[in-house]
Length: 98
Image (cartoon, rainbow, N blue to C red):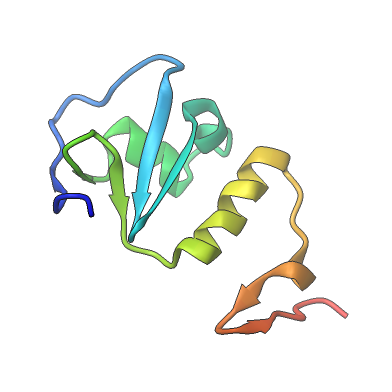
């Protein structure tokens, strides 16, 4: 089990390096480009330093959200496609669109 996250340093990392995220007890790895292609989004703000972050001992950013829902968000950022019928919320598949 990972150590509790600590406050991130003031200076955000730069460049196109891989960014590791720590979502509750799951780890997700993706590129900064994937996380920041939506301007003025939560992730753009997080990685630019406009939103303070907590990081674990490996530098992974701590995000206190349900990892199964986070996987859906990350897949949307990767593919730019969303399939709402396949989203599982609270043990049931969401039927947002009919």
